Each structure stands twice: as C-alpha cells, then as structure tokens.
Amino acid sequence: MNKSDKIREYFRKFPDAEVAKVVAKFQSSKPMTYKLRKQVQEEWQPPALAPLPELFQEVSVEETLDARAQDYGTFRDSAALMQGIKRLLADHAAKHDKTFADDQWEALEMIVHKMARIVNGNPDKVDSWVDIAGYATLIADRLQGNAR
Image (cartoon, rainbow, N blue to C red; front, side, top):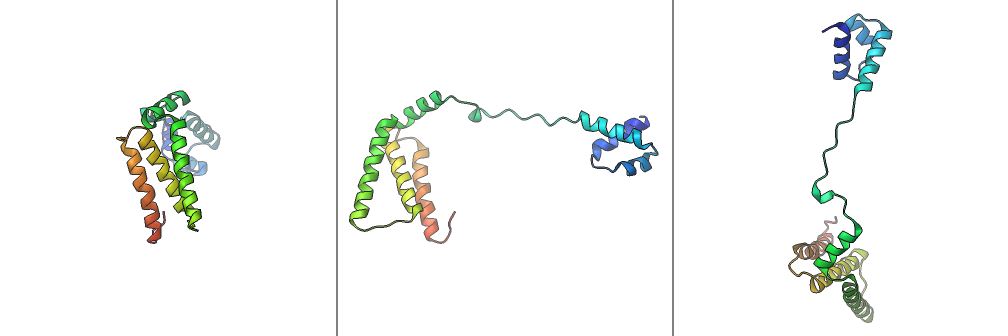
C-alpha cells in the first residue's frame, strides 16, 4: 500500500482528522493531503435505506377506505350511531350540570367511536376493544396521578 492509499484509509477511519496532523504523521505535503481528504469525502455515499416493511407500503385512499368499511361498516352508518350516542351523552350531562375535563370528554367520545365501530362493523376486531380499554386506562391513570 503506497502513502496515498494509507492517507486515504486514515481519512476513512478518521474523517475529522486535522490535515496538519495527517501531514506530520505521514510526512506528506499539505496540498496532496487536502486532495486525498477531498477524494475520500467525495467517495462517501449514505448507507442504503432498508426497504419499508409491507405494513408501511403506500396504500391508496380508496384501498384504505374499502378496508375500513369491511372492518367498521359504512362511514355514514357509523357516524349516525356515533353522533346519536354523543348527543345523548351531552344532553344528559347538561341536564345534570355535569362537567368533564377535556381528556375525560375526549376519552368518552373516543370510546363511543370505538363502540359504534364494533356495533356497526366487525365485533371480533381486537384493536377496537383494546382501544376502549386504553382510553379508559388513560383517564384512570391520570386520576391516580400518573398522567401520560
């Protein structure tokens, strides 16, 4: 391995090495050392990105909507059920002068959302049940001093 190869190899291992120190270490000229450092910098390529798993492949809006309809029923039917339940809850809370923290009300609305998806769509979709438990847990945890 000649001196130029050794200097290039050194810059590959230590890309931030000071040129003056490399000149002293290899007893080379500054212009040549700068040139070799530039060669090494220009040969660097970013590492290749790993292919995305199938889960993250681009899916069209149409495909997404069709899949959701299979799991949760039509959006129109789900929305009618969700909004009916939400109105009922809001009216009842107002009638009894109930007030809720934002996170509590949002959790109730999200639970209603998940319930309507279950009733309108596939009741065996585990994610919906887990989501309901998750929203309830977030509120219970916050009330016990463990806000997330």
